[in-house]
Length: 132
Image (cartoon, rainbow, N blue to C red):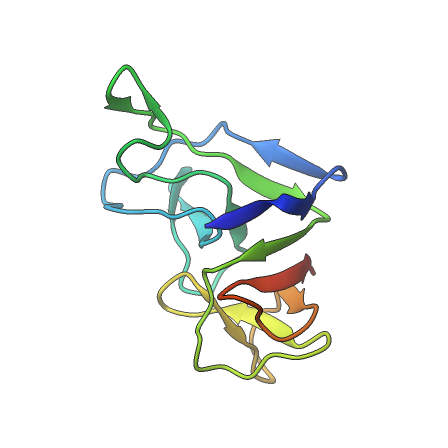
């Protein structure tokens, strides 16, 4: 989930042109996704990744009881708080972050693709991040 009350994404583009791949069972706001054959799939950190602004949860992103087949992703500069991170990791001022195999953020290793930076340590179960 993303805390929308303290989000700043005025300079990021919301793209909602890609369908979610039928193989995807679940996406939560704040998880990272990538493209495979032109469709959205959960990221494992090995390819360029984007933060999901939508969810496949019941009651969310639904039109007339039918789930929407597309969700928005952010492309560009943003600052926001997400609960989609590995709680075991150590986070501090500008810790480089990568995407783990569960499509959630974790501290980056030396050879990992950096997708964001933590602003501070997590607060109340949310990690404040700045896009890379």
